[in-house]
Image 1: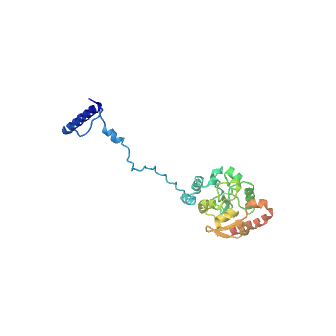
Image 2: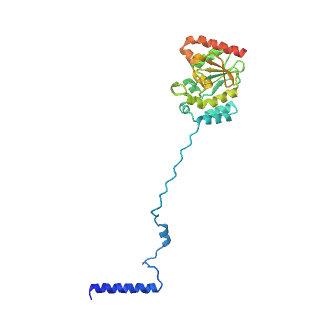
Image 3: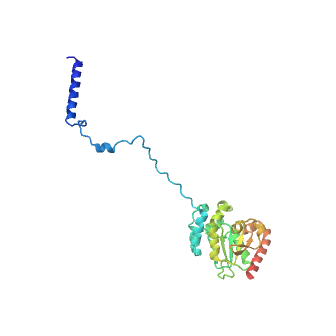
Length: 263
């Protein structure tokens, strides 16, 4: 018998065997080893039409509004100590990162006169008190000439002093409008808690913070209103150190302040 005949006989034999199995009820082929079809289902590949799931995209962090945060923190402060803590804990002003100390205030908080300066200098930053350098020493002498002292326990003879900015700007630069606006809620709350009879704004920054305008050389000596209080603008004592001739005008401003307090 040739090879072709043998192949034909094997094929007919296999076909006959398959037909017999179908008649016997077989409906699937069986392998040599058992198959766990639960494992096959778990490992089944995803259909080609399924789209890959992208990881969730993290939302951009919500940026806090510094002025709104300052207003909220200032409003909660019911005492000067609480306000000091609120300012010390305020981290949204970049100036704080480069400062050694938070410069809050000095003097008698029951005084009739509140002096509002601009920002701490190097000496103030080191000591944590406003107006302790050369300009501050000059201011102390100027106010002493009309009977006022920051150390007096007598509210009639005392003054209280603070700044618009509690932290020293780098290089003693002027605070920019955004920085001033950020800290103004604290300034306003500070003045409300002290409740002085008059405010003295020394320098352009404090004038701008309270009135929205600059030009201290034009404004000095002219009484106006700010936050419901009489406001006297004066040149900053640092300016007087650079321009001694301007001390005459500053003396006139001090006499005006003295007359207001007596009246």
